[in-house]
Length: 425
Image 1 (tube, one colour):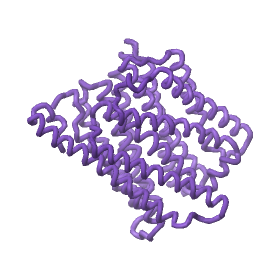
Image 2: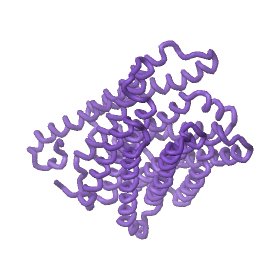
Image 3: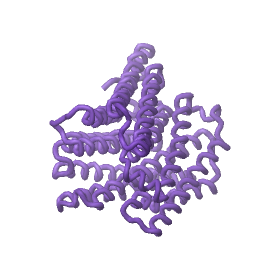
Image 4: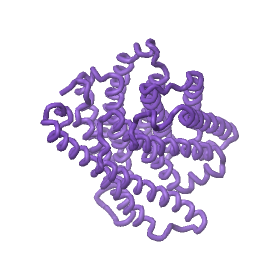
């Protein structure tokens, strides 16, 4: 195996986590259609979110960062990668049993320790690149890891609150929002923007350093302040609303700067990303702007109250960002790196994926609007969203199989000489 290549088993593992997340999501939807008495919804939900964030997203990010900045050191991270997968499997097994308890906390803590080790090792091996002129791509990456570490306060607080019978308190919900905020708006967003800057600059497309500096500081400041957007439902005073409004404006302005810089500097023909990657990135950037607008709206009491009353709005927003921004960007970056291949079957999988995404988002936001005006649920809402959700695992399975098919065909064409590193598990 070429030491600069990511083992295909790593990519398969990351996609397998995403498949598991989708299947768990179907189970959660099924519980509203037909009683499933052998499991507890809340515990399954914990497994769903942890495998999504710490399994799929973290594994994909680890693959992307190593292939991008440390291609000659990939083999040195093999043990760490599989230790992280062990912790994810541990969470997948333990969270459905009892939610937050001793063993699930042990596995989630293990993941946090191992993820921090990866962040430190990555920083130590790449910090010299900043001195050689690479600045804002890695600055975004480093701050992404800082926010990852900050977000871990949330789960640790949950463990403490559960141990002290405070599971129904506002602090319990705030701890969840704290974790989600610094994962979504900190860790995920900063890492993905850092990678985008790198991929563009490696193709000779450099943004204004002055603009990048402004974007960077706006996003760091707004990431800290915008946590208050998640607290307006419990801390209802003018100061919290003012901070929330300022942070929402700063964040939206930073997103707008990113989009305008891309429009001004990037021509699709120059990126050489390929049609699939370019389309995925374009969709993700539209969702990025929508994300900023929705967050800004929650700085206003009326919309903050709506988000509190109608749970589907919050779920719709979380899925909008995870399924419409984060996951498509990860697909695009893996395609750019050639860690996965955009063959016909993969494109079919992507088409089914976005079909499911569009239908579930329409249903989630539509359900909230319908309840607001008619005080009851959409007809057959739970059946419809369960059916639409079932398209996700089908799409991901096709994408996963498409990579195995590409490998088989690649072996036949190249005589099993140059593609051994891409062989099946």
